[in-house]
Length: 295
Image 1: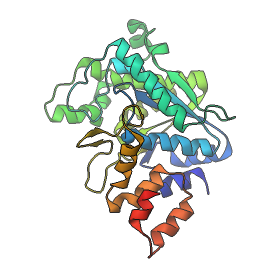
Image 2: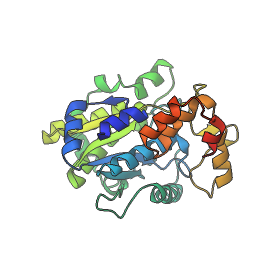
Image 3: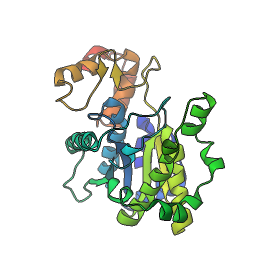
C-alpha cells in the first residue's frame, strides 16, 4: 500500500495542489513537510489530533515532519474560520502556550529516528522582518483581488463582520513561512485543515514566483461528529491533549461516549490500527460497538 492509498482509506485527503506529481515524489524519496500550529490556546485539543495523526502516518512511510510553532503568527491571529478578531496574547502567554504544545508533540511524534520530526518556530524569521523590505520583495506577489476570494476573508466580509488589516496580513505571513522552510529545510509540502487551503496555495505560489520551483499543498477535512459539530469541545469545555488540563480518565470518557456512527471513522483517523483490520471490523456482523469503543 502506498502512502496516498492509506491517506485516502483513512479519510485524510481533502484537496491537493498536484496530486499525481506529489504521489510520484513521495513514493520515490523522503521529503520534508510541515504543519503549523499557532499558540492561541493553553495546549492542543482533539480538534488538532487529525493533523498530528497525519504527521505520524507520513513519518511511518519515512518522511520528515516539521512542526512549526507559530509564536510569530500568534501575535497577529488567523482569521480562518473565525467570526471575530482573536484576542491578542502577551509574549509571556505565547511562550507558555508554545512550551505546552511542544510537550504534546513529544508524546506523539518521533524526534530521534533517522527521519526524525523537527521543531521550528516562525518567530525566528517573522520577528526580524523589515516591513518595508518585506512588502517590496514579497508583497508584490500577492493581489488583493485574489486574497478577497479566499474563505477566511470572503466569509467575514459577506457577514459584514470586521476584518482588521493585521488579520488580512496573516495569509501573507503564512505563505512566507512556507517560503522560509523551503529555503531552510528543503520543505516542499504544507499540510493543513481545509480552512487553510487559501493560505497554503499562497505559499505554493510564492515559492513558484520567487524560486521557480514546485512545492505542494494538501488539506484534510475539517473534523465533525455525526451531528455535524466540530470536534474538540464539549459542554464541559475543550478536550485537551495535555493530562495537566484534562485527566486521562476524562479523555478516555470522551472517546468512550462518541456516537456509535462515528466509531469506525474515528478508528481510521485516530489510531494506528492496520486499515485491513479496520475493514474486517467494519464488515463484521458480530461487532460489539461498545467493546470496540473501550479498546
